[in-house]
Amino acid sequence: MNDDPGRLPFLGKQPPSAFELRRIVLAPGFSADYDESEWRDAIVVVEQGEFEAEGLDGGRRRFGRGDVLWLADLPLRVLRNPGRAAAVLVAVSRRHRDPDAGLPGAPPPRLAGEHQGLR
Image 1 (cartoon, rainbow, N blue to C red):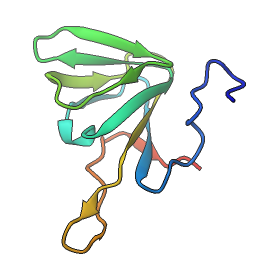
Image 2 (image 1 turned 90 degrees about the horizontal axis):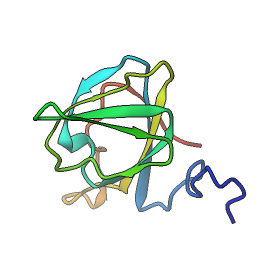
Image 3 (image 1 turned 180 degrees about the vertical axis):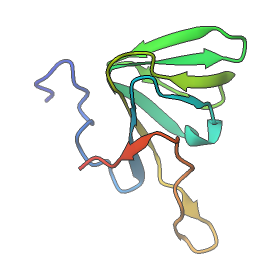
Image 4 (image 1 turned 135 degrees about the vertical axis):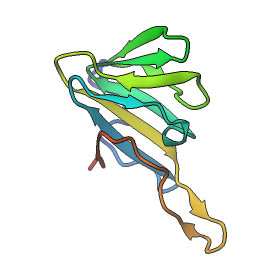
């Protein structure tokens, strides 16, 4: 059972071996061009802070703690943290496999920000 209603139950735990969990920290003022391949096959949860997604049309949408997102295949230009505190995103995706070797392959490309594996 989840004792803290503000915390999602899978955060802070290791996912099953078929899944990969990435923690992305966007420092205050950090901005990066959107790269769809970094978010492919991932469900993203805002664990802390807020971040902003800017569309190709210039429109912006802000997301905050507890929001659950799918950031793949979207008409986005930039992801940024306009706030004064770090934004922490947790992305859960299936592990990618090398079809030739049958072994886990290299993970998908990473955002230029800071990434930390959860323990």
